[in-house]
Image (cartoon, rainbow, N blue to C red; front, side):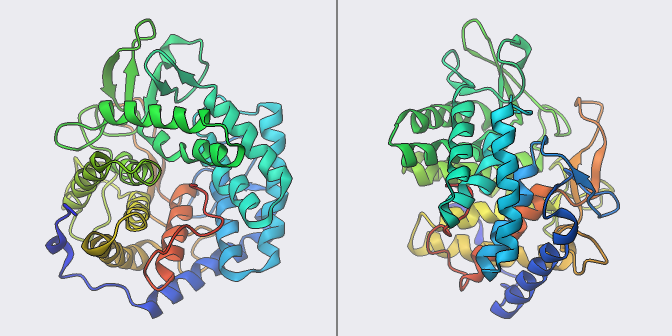
Length: 400
């Protein structure tokens, strides 16, 4: 594994007892939210570390439902299952009514919520909703360019682009092939994956956030950013999407070139971490900067390391697990919510968007919890808590 082990050898691995305590705290945090959020959703990010209620029309709604399923998997408490199933019905209504579904984020929405529900309970409503979402996602594929369009109307030529985040949406398509036997879903996922890797990964293994294509020819045009500091910088969460997304791609398509690329993209992320290992929101910034951190980027990368650990063996597996066990410790210590009085989220110190002179973002969700950070943090704890050694996907985990 082409990852610098010595970079973190001074950091202790988290103990089984510390992991158990952190997971118990996380489940307690989820449980404390049931009175308010059992039948409704959380907003994308918190305000002063507390989420408000939101309708099921945002790209992040599936993460809160997924957090409920993770709590159910860990406790078998039917309260979590009952709350999540209420939300599954909402997801069926959303896809049937076409509520904010012109997006590639259908994987983020329907894998942690409905695919997980179907795997855990066999619920046919969940299966129906997830397959409808897979059909909608597949409809966003452009033959010219060979990619799934990220956002907006397919007819608007200004939308002719992919973003790195979509690598985490592809497992919905792989699952649909596994469930239906129709190879088309997985074929589209593979073609998008190949296209994305060709354009979003730079020669130094940093990554672009967004890449545009010519709608007439399908040829690649340019890489830009929406949420990073600039088009040429490395947005830390985008890099983490690359880490986890490439690991997932390797799970489904065991090509050595994918594993090698995972190692390089992951090494870039790890080599650019500051001293306390909580990344700044963009890797332009280093120790001494006053810019905010993005804890969610580290949570996603830890999950990516554990995903790859599931797919390799021997020394490579040991390196992935050991690195994850070392990195989760500062994430818990510095960023986790310790009580419902402190926050109704899981992971503090995240960033949704930060405005710069070189992007078209706005300032929002800065130094706050965000739903994907919460979800992937609990996923990381869950996977590591299985004696610290992943042994295959948990039954309901949303990515497969």
